[in-house]
Image 1: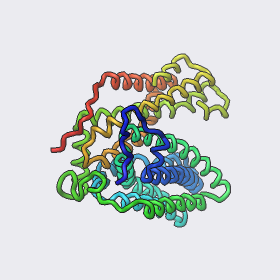
Image 2: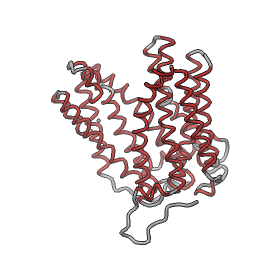
Image 3: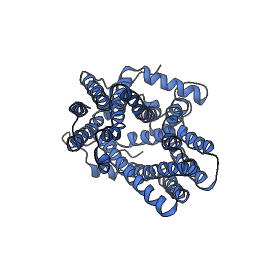
Image 4: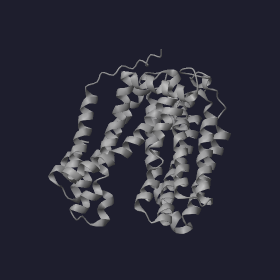
Length: 384
């Protein structure tokens, strides 16, 4: 292992250049950015493919979101593998699996239910190789370098998602949905080969874990459920997970209502895209396009607060459960961000769109107040 060394002088702080100079992080960072682009491309083109085959908006929406909710079940049932198996094999296998799935969708004309099942099955395995990758990043970067590394990952992920969505539209227009899916498969294959060639073969014990059954005896499912139970029973880890899950879920619920809010107030259709939570409370005044956009921009800045929770979260994790913890963190966030719009959509049906957005913003603000009351210890969760 070649972790970023702690600075000899206490006043020195890590820089983005130093973080990117760490070869293992640079490899994982670059391949994950490409993979997120491929994810957005695959999700968009698969949704188009389903809609063109069925004409159903419901099935098209299901195709867009089918890869999210199964991740929580995958984390609970398979998450311990992120700490029990060599990371290179897991990460390479994950990218190869998504490549095969994209090729199946591109080349095989299967029933819609079967194609949705393929995407859902891949989503079950996603937290395992994402957890292994996140654990390896945490072991490669120390001190504030880790926080900067997570910051870079977040920035790149947002940009890659936007680029992937734009690429998806262009690829579908130029190539058609099936050939566009083949393009995403090629990107996944490139990631798999890059990790296979560039990442050293490490055993779990070589990057801070314990080989074999790290947390409990028995099979994978039993060990995964046992590990997830230990993590969620630990007060510090549970609080830090909730602090990173709840605000984005509330904001996603508000974002899911923006189009309806704009439509009810007859905003110009082209401005829907420019319309997350204390700023959301400002919707109680029923603002226009300009103020609405400013409120959402301010809310977006609030997501930077999550970076302050990264180091305490890592410090609170048991050494042999980091991979599963990162997988659970990511899958829980994805699931709740999918559930949030549905919940607040139902609320909006009863109290109105603007009031539902205000409620979402108030819930996010209350969560922030709860976080501010903490005196978070940084000792790891005890493992029986």
